[in-house]
Amino acid sequence: MCLFLSVAVFAQKDSVVKKIIEPKQIRIGLDISRPILNAFYNDRYGYEASVDYYRGNEKYWVLEGGFGGSNIDYDNLKYTSNNSFLRFGFEKSMVPRLYKSDWDYLFFGMRYGLAFINRSEASFTTSDNVWGTTLGTVSSKNFTGHWLEINGGIRVEIFKNIFAGYNLRAKFMLNQNPFKELPPAYVAGYGKGEKATTFDLNFFLLYALRWK
Amino acid sequence: MIRILGVFCCLFFIVACQTQRDPCLIPTDVNMRVRSMKKLTDSTSTDSVLVNLNLTAVDNDTLKYLYLGAKNISSFFVRLSPKTDSCLYLLQPDSSINSIDTLHFYYGRQLKFLSNACGYTYFFTIDSVHFTQHNIDTIRIVNRDVTTDVNTNPLEHVQIFF
Picture (cartoon, each protein chain N blue to C red):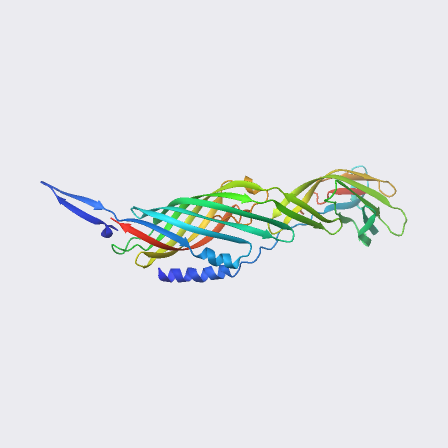
């Protein structure tokens, strides 16, 4: 692990003092899986980006954000929703470096997520084979969602300063009450609004800036 | 690491190919379950078989048959109207006998969100049942909440004693 550390040696009168200089790195990335998924889904969309900072000792601070929404146009239910979101947390490499400039790693991490959600007025119908069809509306609503995530994944430096990697996420909603009355079918950054627990995949391409 | 990335890409495209609208997988029918009974003594009762049931909903001036000549049944469904707080039915236990009772159900309605895939429905809370007594002796409400739950105890919402 300590092979990659830059070591400056200063001779003193009676002893040797070692000053350890850790490399610094900021990485910015985009989730390239979202535009592909957006093309497959016709009732939802989302975009995600990531910034992380290497804080030493194989730990990273991570800030992620994005936006998205859903457009539900079913026979019995119609509404739109959109939201922006932020997630912040950390990642910890679980494998030792093979050499000094080895930035590939397998990680475990956690996030706190926060989404600002707007849902339009919804119109719905119920049908009954005896009494016929009933029409109704549900008023629009603005609310926030909070969740915690457990993350795992990898980052691989495929070219110098260019990384690819994925995140597997398990997300646990912290405030379910606002979601009881017509939760959005899709909350960007979280997943299905009507689920208390969701699982997700991201595929990031990232660019790293390093300095000492 | 590159191999792991490759495996992930394969998984991703499998997931991406399964992106259809979620199916509705939970019960959506809200039926009031009715059981026909007869008293044996003051404290005991048993099922009463209706030999030839006609059950008709009265929607404004239109008659809609739910059961027409249904043979030898002792329990049946009634649909409550989501448009009004009461609904009227005509009950003829034996269509060979020209004797019809009216059942007037009074209830509260609650709009209930099921899921995005299934949409909304109405749940009901039965307040009372008004009825004529040509064939019917009495009616007992044993479970006021009419929902999609099919595992209530007792199973029926209303017992009709003949």
